[in-house]
View 1 (cartoon, rainbow, N blue to C red):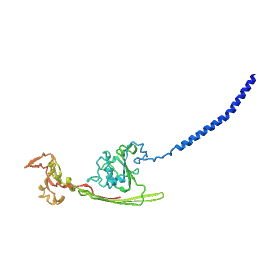
View 2 (cartoon, helix red, strand yellow):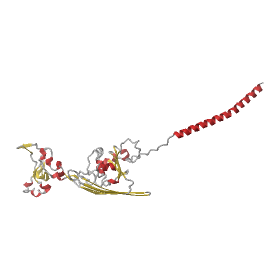
View 3 (tube, helix red, strand yellow):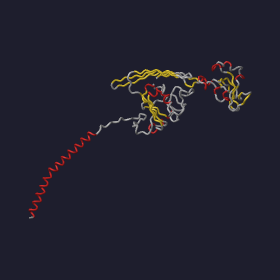
View 4 (tube, rainbow, N blue to C red):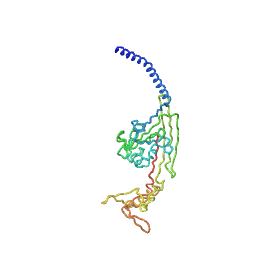
Length: 349
């Protein structure tokens, strides 16, 4: 009896296994078919992936995506420079809100580097704290020291039409570039390709006279296979602006302080060292009419004058404001009118 029951159990197990095989196979095939259908549907619904172009901030020697940088980058294109009427890089950079410091530029007459146009003073710091680059490479220094103390880079020799754009990275960048970039970095990016020849002529002036300028520039390029050549020529001529061409600087009579407006400047003076320091000596006490032969200078306005004494309080005589002179000399109220507010300049690059 026990053997019969065991035989029946074994046969039942084999029958169930044989019966389940087709069912299991059918279920597997059905599952695979459903997954394939779903995958096909998902592929149809999936949109093509758009590849975004990488934006590189070239104001840094280390390429960085613009979305990752915390430093604002000011970009000036060649179109922006020409739209504002600037005829060189110095003028475009000097007009930026970041250029808050005073430098020796076109309005400096007695400067150490009158032939150079340094980078602007960013954030009020001297120009040697601003690093100037061309396509990521630093420029060589100007042969003369700025204020006889430190070196600067001259950006006046770069033709304007050779520029593609200028990028300014303000603030402390010394961790990347060193101590020369404490105020920031200026990267001048040149054109990489130029088709044909671009010839331009530009002229300008000022309504009150003086300072007229003309500029002729030509930019060309040659592209053949892997060879790409861009060349440029530029000639700029600028006339000076004299002080006598502006009413405010024409003479000492333009001084709003009437007490100082009556005091001309000494162009020739004889000094004698006394117990209290240098004392002005009257030229006529040495040579009669000593200032007469000098009268033709400064537009014929040079005469014997009394020097202004800043320690003497204002006094009135017969309704006229007078001062106690500190001596006498040969001078004129228009002397500083013959200084330039903007220097004459002829440059070719």
